[in-house]
Image (cartoon, rainbow, N blue to C red; front, side, top):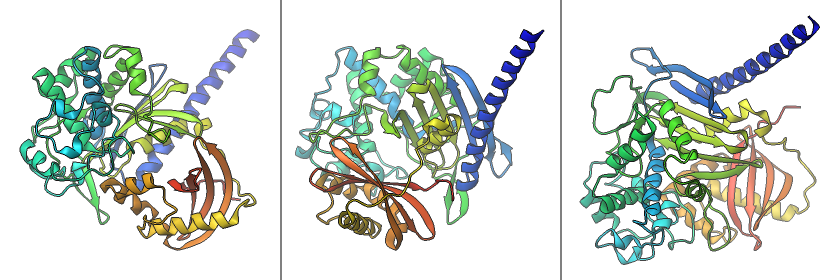
Length: 464
């Protein structure tokens, strides 16, 4: 009898712990929905490839007040790049393409500026090609033909010399889709369906092309001036996106990749290895996957956004944890939401508390503070900025990133916290207060004392 009571007590404790973690995940999702005004969310979490949470939150259609269900289809945006990279690597395994093939081998009449662009540069976003999504006339919401796309892109200069920097660009994966078609004679959409969706039983994954009636499809939204409007339709996807999926299907894809059903394990390892620049610095991207180390933990992911949706496939290898999160609001950064969910489930993933410390170099801190104000005022030409940082911020996406620093035009306090080695650079962390809010700001500084990267996040340290 004593043994039975003890066993029941252990089971009760395990059950309570699981419920507690589940509640924290629910709290994290609901808090994000309230903070960002997200109408609806579908979430699927697996641990050791067993489903631990499959839940829907909120509304999929605001006009009809229809709730989200776990089986609903959402636009997945740039998550489609993971499909395209898989197709390219399948062709590579078959010896039909080399990672060092120049783009001119497959695309005719490329401009001289593209002569150094190789397949690996496009897979890893180091080509220097401008992101067509931000180019007037051939943007995502514009209507254009492939011929019109090339006519415009061929006239544009590169954002930086090929291979010297990382800058995410949809142009890379549009071209990879066309190259796959050139090699196989089939459109990239057909290849993805035949080589990925069908073998894995992804029966609820469809091409987002036009406006067909698709049962169980969520409605997407765009927020403008604090008013929710119906999604902004974007053009037909090529290799860079354009799919509709369920959480379950995306989980099947991520698991199928790891189980060697689509590419060899060593190929997947290559795809999920960060690129390396001539400076020796790692990029945050492999071939079709973001690969980041945050707070000492590795995350492998890919987010996706369209004119009405924001989603993510998110993997925490050390936890054998996969998170698929899909929302029907365009402004949601899926990877950020997925990371918040992971941290709610496993609090040990959270960053360690940031503590203010005596400043070992007040003069240099003053220089960094001034640089932060410059960023807030959209100025990036000062000597303190590393050439690669200048190149990144000069791109269309880089200009968008500058908007994040707007709160720092008037800084109220700038307190040193810590210094960490981040080979080959050094990371300095500060607590910065501006506009009545507190932020944690990190500065990545090179050996030459140049500013290579600046990161920021809300300060969520416990209030004293």
